[in-house]
Amino acid sequence: MRNTAMRRLVLAFAGLLLPATILAAVPTNPGATPGITSLQGQFLVATPAMRDPRFDHTVILMLRHDRDGAFGIVINRPAGERPLSELLAAIGDKNAAVSGSVRVFGGGPVEPQIGFVIHSTDYRIAETLDVDSRVAMTSNAQVLRDIADGKGPKKSLVAFGYAGWAPGQLEGELGRNAWYVAPADENLIFDDDRDKLWDHAVARRTQDL
Image 1 (tube, rainbow, N blue to C red):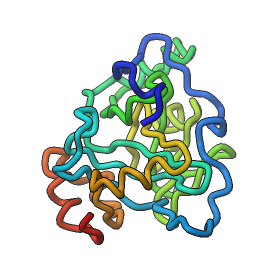
Image 2 (cartoon, one colour):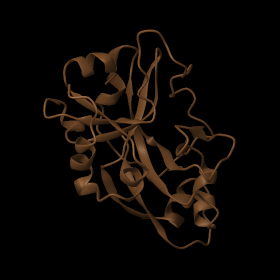
Image 3 (cartoon, rainbow, N blue to C red):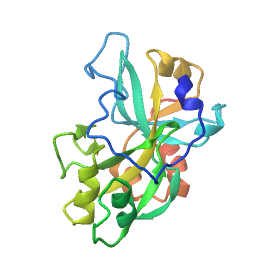
């Protein structure tokens, strides 16, 4: 991972800011690039050869992968339950009279103060990023408000931070057998037991590296 990923993973709920867009963080030009097979919409699954303890037994949903680099969210590092009212208060909506809570995940060591919501495609606002035909991502305060109001996506996963790779970096890690590649599955993203998710993702791998 790039140098900014070296800082300790901290989920900064106090003072949380969900930006209107994360385009600066997301690699652009997602179309096919000669010499690169895009892993967008697939899982990266840490292999036993993974030497970075921050990614030991992780499963990452890849949101972008092209000639400009790669970007994904770890989906099997739960960080506990947080009341929706607390999250909304942290982004300035301190008078929100809402109940309920959401499970929050550590999405990766880069920019841990930024929140992301991975969700089903039945929900969309202007800043929503399509991952594939079944899964999308939104990094905007409105999605939390809509979840609180019962207007959000049917299925969702809230994460803070992400995993990012510079151009060619992920390809190098694949070449060093650090990752398996597996087809993503909605049930694994949203519903599967997080303690068993790595095993289930490994069982789906399409590439022994």
